[in-house]
Length: 168
Image 1: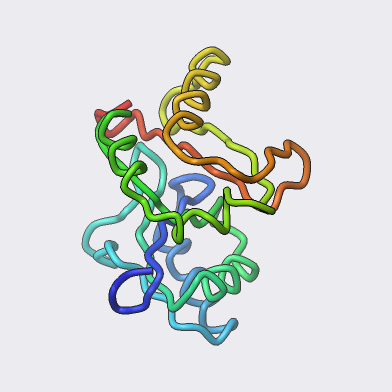
Image 2: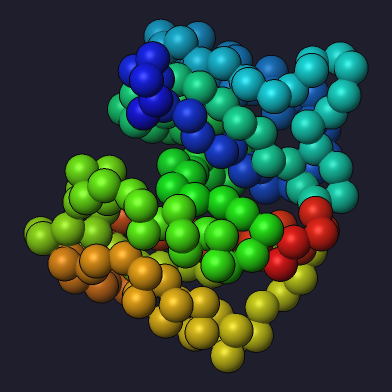
C-alpha cells in the first residue's frame, strides 16, 4: 500500500497473446466486483504492455482485498503480485528486502503464517540447483518466523525473473 492508500501490484498474464483483450478482462472483472482498479502503465491503444517477455502490467487498486476480488473474477491473469523488491540483480533486490518493515511482511512470513517459496522465470528455465540457491539466498535475507508448508500454504512467496529484459 502506498502513501495514497492504494495497493500497487504486478499482474502477470498466462501468455502475451491478445494483450488488449486481457486488459479489457481486468476492467470488466473490476467492474463486476465493484472495485476501483486501474492499469498503470499500459498506454491502451498506443503501446502494448506485453511482448516477448510475456505480459507484466502494473495495476492499482484500493486494497489487497480489492485485488483478490478482481482476481477471483478474472480468468486470464496468472497472478497478482505484491512486489516487495525488484532490481537488475540479486544484490539490489536483497538490499531492498532488508529495508522492508516487519509490518509489511509479518502477515506473510510472521508467526502463525504458512508459506512456500516459488521460483519462476520468463525467458529461461531455472535448474534445480539455481532454484535451491535462490531460495537459500532469500532465506538469509528475510526474517522467517512462520512455517514453510509445501501443500496448501496460506501464502506463496514468488521470486520472478524476467530474463528477456536483460536482467537475470
